[in-house]
Figure 1 (cartoon, helix red, strand yellow):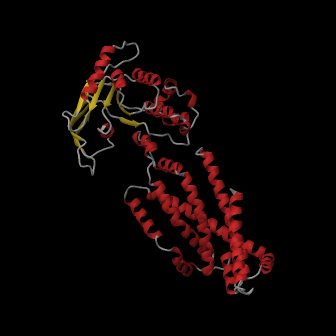
Figure 2 (cartoon, chains in turn blue, green):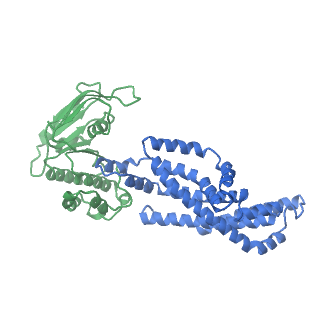
Length: 249
Length: 230
């Protein structure tokens, strides 16, 4: 799992890098537009430590936002599974709101909350929240009749048992959705830092962008990719551990 | 009269034809009874109507001395986080916990007590599902093909055990097997297409049980009667 993700990332990253070099040398572009290998390597040595800390900063915010959105999606998903009006209201609202691009709301959040941690956290959580919520509502509102029938018939069913049955039966889907939304959390945090933040790798990329320094951006992308891959591997490992403990694999 | 179905009319929403048209039948005494009929005639639907899962039909279902109806079918599953034993312990009322061991032994489930449901054979799964219902408090248990995929010898042992353990309770056994309903059931409700009148016919089965001799001639007669009626 670990090796596969890292290999995949290295393959994609270096294919992209060689593609850039191909464009540079075939069109005879200057180092100012696309820097050469030596300049990228030099930038890497000089900025690796600084950017690594910035990526860790971003990753920490993304993880916090991800956890926040998982908690929110669980709570709202539990309410949204209800067959009474509040359940259907939440389901309809979730489907409608997720159709709106949340990134477009980001400037309002910065105006209201400023460019601190809270804005980055909120945007990260919001961007990965709706895909999570839709999946959670779908999974938790779908009855598992072959198991639930007995508990309904013998009047043993309660909301905790119902959620447990549905979550257990769909644990593979839940893990896949959580792992998938982790990338979105990282994307959300970086987008927030692009717009207006004073820390994180998105902020560093924004400065590099103003300086038109592609080598800094390439180094930042490399570190973002490595750290995100490691976080995804960690989540997959947690998912596998939970499935093993529950006996579903 | 334990259970009486009077003038039932039912049509599935969106369906063009009636499933039941003025259906009448009764179960008069406790025991192991059968609900028999060809596929698609409405046995499961009728079971769900008796159980209260299907509402919105014309007619009346009345019962005396039957307060708690349970309905079990052969596609049910146990939750994956429990072994068979853990599940039986968890869902059996305190007053019935003493029966678990005897039932597990009679149903031949000793070897799979510590296994998860998904790892059991189809026959073991059906026996496990049925055993947990038998450990509940009920007055009428509707068994919808609950012993499908169980070999004939084990099936006979299980049915005889049920009859011996619960002589005062009422069972409605849904099956397509003419031999087993003729042999083991006391009253056989044969359900027919709504074009036929009456739609349900009640016949007497041999009600075979331990210690009672089986009369082959009468068994053949019951089987012929069921085939002719249905």
